[in-house]
Image 1: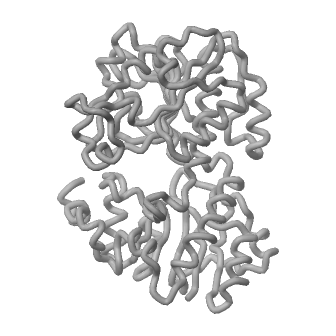
Image 2: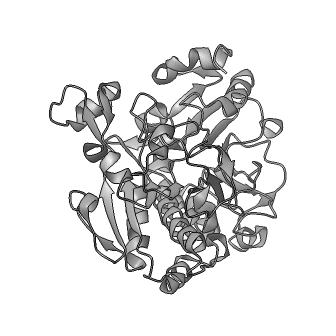
Image 3: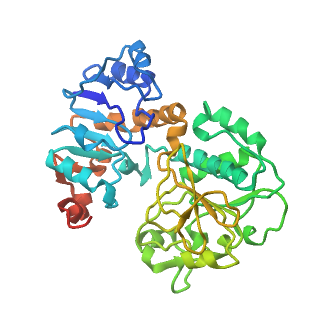
Length: 402
């Protein structure tokens, strides 16, 4: 087979790659029966010359490839018929903004494998989540400094790498204490926690957090057992929550009335409860004044996430009483960062990590004579037709839902 690494075509542009030059070289050496090439791009974090120096062909035309791998969605005008695509499609939750993409892939009789659904023991094997958490938490700290005008950090995408980003955190001052709640317990939350600890912010137990009255920066790390409860009052059961999220309601009030910063790292199901409502925001007890929504569900469980923002302009404001967009950094209103491609701020670091996971877990399954079970479970479309695990997308594909 011929495998092509796509240039990213979505706007705003993303500089990440599925494989670094060294990793494509390793693929070519390990799988000499297959051919690997890279589509030319002036934007990606690794230049054409770096791939060429690794002995990898770089070309504009990848139409002869059987498998095409990118990071973000491919624009409609660049899709090619009867190809196997791997990228983050953002379609399996029936996202309206990508419905035409899904329909077009089907019409072209393409096979779509979505990275998000490549699982091993129900855990994602490739993801940029850790890096999203790192940069989302950094944006929260950066935004808090701008909101209170007491320190300034370099924008995330101006940092050369993670080491420089952590150096910037030395500028954080403690005169206006941050009290931060993280929602979620996966890779994203792990990356966010690492950055907060690097900034000297103390981690405390979720049960201590609501009543904490200290004068230092603190954060707590919460899961659904902390911010939801069963309607009947029975003890929280994670497996039951996953199977029947509509049987649960929000119990987030003790956190929203204590934290001044929310870093949202949770996975949200459309049937799960919302964290708070626009009416909650009007309550004088509501303390949150900055939200870094890494989960970035629009619309979703956090009413201040009105839209996705961009890396160059990550912040916008939301009025607590009208829930309308305003200018950011008013300390009496809510400032929001809702960037949906956060890992692209550190594209080389994030790409290397992602590519290593692909090399180890995915490529051996993908390049089998018959793709492995992991690949089949992540296949939304096979030659344009819905696969059984994603049969629920029938109305979405046929245009009944939009």
